[in-house]
Length: 440
Image 1 (cartoon, rainbow, N blue to C red):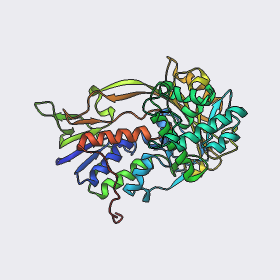
Image 2 (tube, rainbow, N blue to C red):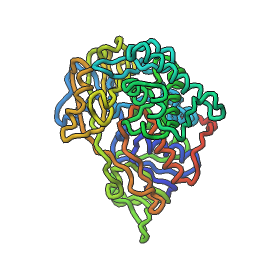
Image 3 (tube, one colour):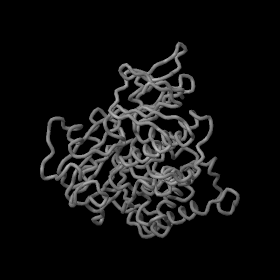
Image 4 (tube, rainbow, N blue to C red):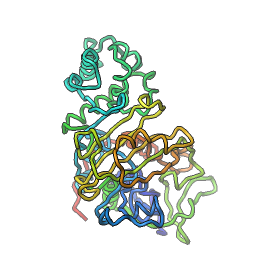
């Protein structure tokens, strides 16, 4: 460890592992350290014993749940957009050679006390039980406009300027009702709250197009998921970094960040050893004095012996409960997966509920999600604080990632990856196919 590096990375969360891989490809000498004895940090997938140790210390898992190695339980409920930025990064870095993916079978939204499939195009809108006959026609016209809009062709724009007009203006233009706005804004554009309505419409239109293009890629839903859990993702990028010369150390305590007389980070100390580097990258847990809390996240991991009710017995689903439907300020997300994804034994299912806490009793806030699951065999819940860095890192050379948020996909995480990459290197991340490497 007593060497000099270009970059020292602290923590093996997905953001850190992606950047470790990308910087290694760029020719940087990278040392990657984690105090944990497993990869992934908040993006880890745990076996049964690890799950009980984290949430119910001292309690052994019931024998009825089977073998440890048959469980890979995610700590975060996220899927990949089939045409999203993380998928593109995986393809262009060739990390897909290490990971196999399976499509998520359905995407649902909660409305008026029940759940229904999210329409992704004008034809599905016409069949949707979410809307009346006349509202279906209005939704069809809206989705046709979204698909056909061209900046250089006024005939496609219906007198709407995406950079000037708000989504509120667009909804009014098409006469869309509040409930329809809910599933468009929250289940298709995947906004966390309703603040987007007052903002220019371009971002929402782009988000809907991403949803539609991801849906078109495979058909059943816009989401894909790695076999054996999300923990495969950071491990895949860690392997990429190692192929390009990166050094990994797990179960290695970090006692302090070392600074020079000007307050610039120059390395890290672990025991008597000091590793030096020009830049330090890490998750917020390694830089408590340099981050601020921006909210709390509440999650519940539930083990079921049945598919989530009212989802056509699908083996995997996403369900979004828009904020207005349960009189909240933030949406509630449910990710449902099963043994077909090699994350639990046959006959079992996992449902993970997540939302931003708004009250002093956050566990009560996920009750609307729990009600949709039916009988629950085991549940594990926790409340986590969310952090973001107070500075951009260019002054002290400490580059800090944001906490994994409540969104149901990785698009916000890859925005953070791109932002950190640009701050650390001085240029934008341009995805170029890397030359093929021999397996190590």
